[in-house]
Length: 182
Image 1 (tube, rainbow, N blue to C red):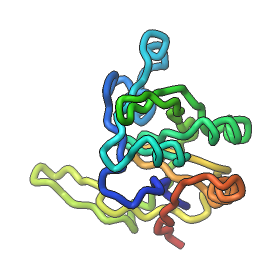
Image 2: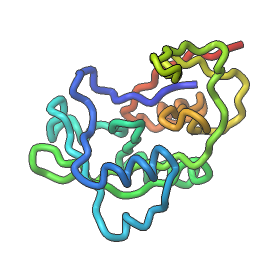
Image 3: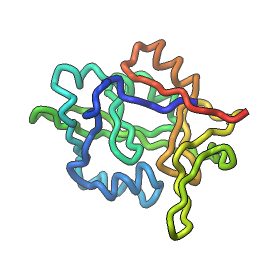
Image 4: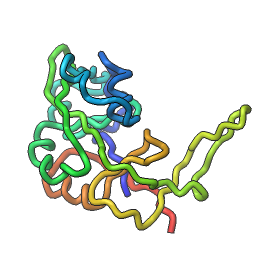
């Protein structure tokens, strides 16, 4: 299992919300509500200062806060049919140096219990509420390409198959291998 990562080694590599922050997080990450708001507004993100017009067009994956995944038009056009049972793509714009560039925000539609709660590390707040700090993922989870955890909704992963497809297509995406229990 892998975590998607931006292939820009710079602390300013996130997309910031310009509009519709609550609707975007609710629909794309927390699986609340529906996509009706998309009929009335254009989703726009602002690229942080680590990006410029030259480098942003070379990336096939960008990351927003709260586990928001944004892919290039090239990625979407190449893999949308293959990924259709696990990811739905919606158009969005990324504002970089005052220019809007078309990208696609991804809605992961497959949810599974992927975190090994016993092997993971948690911190406990004074009120007794536990917060997941270092997740360990269950081995042997059966999914093809991409899945979001059914409990910790801000955690999603991709498979080795997804990584192989990305490499085969020379997509500019980085992947962080995750700790998996045996």
